[in-house]
Length: 188
Image (cartoon, rainbow, N blue to C red; front, side, top):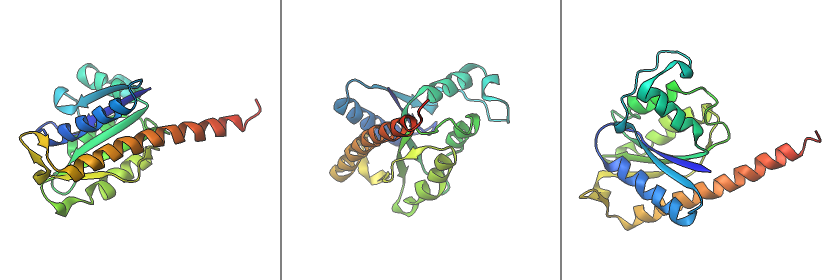
């Protein structure tokens, strides 16, 4: 099983720090899982133009393939202009609509102030639900003040990220059981 963390920005480091922290907690709790960070800053991604996802090349193709092969995700999104970044939305636009079907996604939202705490609720969650993801209900909102020198310094945020890691792992197990139960209901 593979869990990918997506750092949804091409600038800054706070979102990447929070996603990496959570991935490390997942790895601590489940060393048998393959865990990988996908930092969008590391990819030169084409804009989605409506082509089939298989028609992209280079970094765009690599990114699409990485994202589609995962079984679960931690998606980190900074807040720009009271919304998710265009680069993250572009990733969703590049993927087929069923890419996240029955896959568990935990969310981390970062922002400069508490005024943007609902961006994940109103901007990100609807996209993920449309793409048929199993979204962990409680996401973690992290403000600029919770970081210092590239580290998370707020104990309550560290605790909540640790809980997000556990909730994501629990949702993976629950989803697997539910899908197996549905599959077992057929006698052929």
